[in-house]
Length: 303
Image 1 (spheres, rainbow, N blue to C red):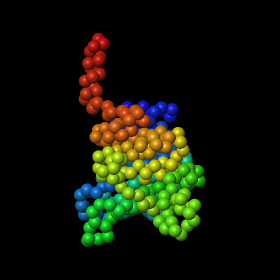
Image 2: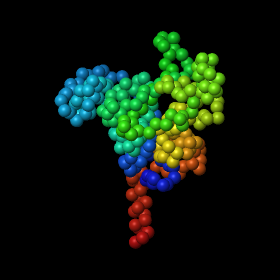
Image 3: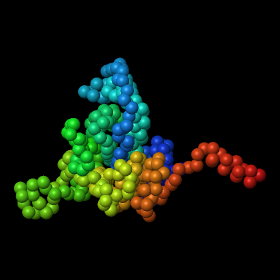
Image 4: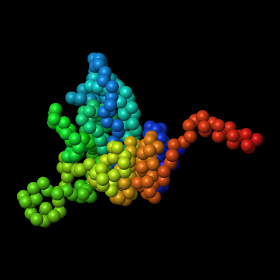
């Protein structure tokens, strides 16, 4: 069971993330980073046209300012070929909104397959005025197809809980080299420049010290930049598709507290090794049948 306490230790939690999220308190986190499955292996389906009932004054506002009776119908108009994926992601994004504090920020990391649909979903959940940035993470590594332009970027959507109150501190962010240092003064070149919304950052080196062996590991430098900009030392940050625990590593480096959740025991093993004494590790509860047997044995012993 989740044992989160505002004044307690950082946590690594094993288990189904939605169950853990529903036990966490409202507004507990200054920043949430999510790197969910990219839906790269989905089965191809035929597309069936679905009607959308538009209604002036409807409960949710979507594309082009149109309002709709329900959020589900809005998604169907754009993405009825991926119902399983969005049924999975929607309730988790709703929990992310609930768990952010009033100055909080969500970073949602996806690739070209799903990011456009996610933008529509997040506009509906957070509100279009809460969209802050589309960050492009560009890298130059790996195989290259000759049948199209090689895909060498991923996209991070940035949403805030309140567009009038969100926390953003550019002075805390690691600077990066100028691409043309000869065009600026030596002082500026030595200091480096603030990142823009295009981040040139290498992937985790297959032979580097940072490598954990987890297949979808993201570089800590990438996530640290988000943590530095959108939280303060001592704040709580959250990742509930935690994988190798990169958010936890970035938070530990910068004096933040964190909760990392993953359903994979292998991922939790990686995080336990990587984060060491920086977090308490809570393994999944026994399955219900085993729990019932244990309770029955205790009652029998007591009688």
